[in-house]
Image (tube, rainbow, N blue to C red; front, side, top):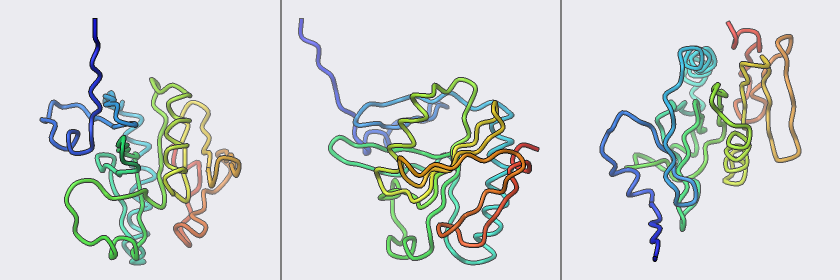
Length: 183
């Protein structure tokens, strides 16, 4: 028996009919993502709203919602979608209005860990973001009530509720108390 495995492309993913599910494409493999629970959505908005207000008021770039796909690699294709993403103004201007997925990695990717997320899957996403050029990956862990900030595979900072998440050189001047993410 011959088994034929079909590699999915970013174009195939973009052309999928809307079946109510979200998908990511990882090295040509289509992965279905379960809908998030209410707590996940609340935490995403707790961090996305102040980030978007800050970014808009300072004119430093664009904040993207979870449905936005970023084409991180080709042949085979990888399209990832962070819960919240930020791309600085200069990069947005250089790309201009484009059809399809954002060509490349965001400057900031924020992921909120869902109850059904496996640690290995979260780690794989972190590595994919960093390897594609994301300058800061933020992982919000509701179970531990912590925030992990990745600047590289080895430069990792763990924040607790008493700490403040700082946009550093990625989103200069933006700060949010970790406790406010979990309210």
